[in-house]
Image 1 (cartoon, rainbow, N blue to C red):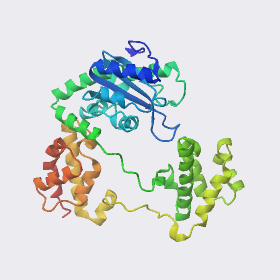
Image 2 (cartoon, rainbow, N blue to C red):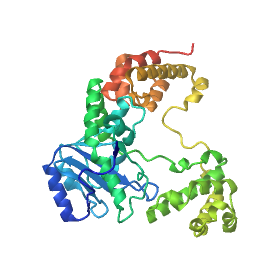
Image 3 (cartoon, rainbow, N blue to C red):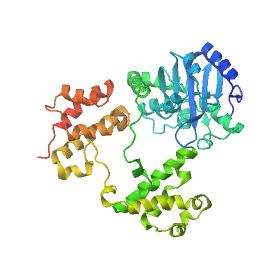
Length: 398
C-alpha cells in the first residue's frame, strides 16, 4: 500500500524564532523516540550542510525546520535530551545535524539495524516496504533542497520520510531481539554516534573520476591544479565543485595539455557557456602546472599510506601474509553466511588487512583481541571473530 500523505497533513515550515520556540515546547512535551532526518543539497551546493530538518515524535507530530533561517537548533536538541533519536543511515546525517546544534544522546539507525539483520536491500523505501508493507516514494531524494521556497510536493516527501520511522524502529528492534543481536546493534549505534569526524583525505584531487586514464606526472599536475582552483571557486560561490567544472573537463585538459585559451576552447567540454566564461581562469591553472619544475610534480602513485600495500601484491611481497588474509577472508565469509551479517559489518576490511599484514607477536587470543579493540572493533565483533583470526594468522605459504 503506498504511503502518500502524512497523517497530520503537510506541516508549515518552521522558519521563525517564535515558531521554533513552539516546536521546542511541543517536542519536549512529546513522548517516546523521535524520528529525525535531514535533507542536503548534494550535487548543487558546496559541502554537506542541511537545508531542511524533519522531526517527528508521538504527542508532537511532525515539524519541518529550516536550518538556513534558523542555524542554531540547540534548543530543540536540549528539549530532546536523553531521548532516543531514530535515523536511517545516521552516519550521513549526524555531521550536518551537529552543524546546526542537533546532537543526540542515543541513536537507533534503521539502516544499520537492517544490515545486521541480513537484509539484502537497506534503503529506507525497501525497509519500510519489508517491515510495514508500505510503499514510500523517493522521487525527490536528489533535488536541490537549497531551493526557496520549497515546493509543497517536496515538503510532503520530507514529512513522509519520518512519518513511520519510529514504527520501523520498533519492528526492527523486535527482529534484533529475536535474532540475539540487540547488543550488537546497541554497540554499533553508539560507535556511530560517537565517531570522530573523518580525517581529510590526503591529495583529495586524486578522487577525480577518470584519473586512471591520465598518465605522466605533468598531466597529473594539471589535474591537481584544476581541481584546486575548482574547489576554491566552489567554496567561494557555494556551488558543488562538479557544477563549477565537471571532472570530465579536468581529465580532457590533462590528456591534451592545451597551451592557450583558444586551444582549451576547442575541447568540446570547455565550449559550453558556463565553462567558457572562465577559460582564462582554467588556462591559468594549466599554465601553472605546465611551468612547475620536475621536483614539484605529483608522484604517479600518490602519497605513501601508513597501511599495508594492496593485497594483490602480497603473494609476491610476503607469501605468508597472502596466506593469512586468504584464510581470514574465508573464515569471515563463512561467519557472515552463518550469522546473516555482511562481512564488512562483521569487521572493517582495513582492520583485517592490517592485522594480516602485521600480526601481533605472539599470536594468541588475547593479543588478537587487543589488536582488534585497538583498531576500533566493538566487543561483539571481537568476541565473534577472534578465534577464526587466531587460526588464520597461524597460516603460512609453506
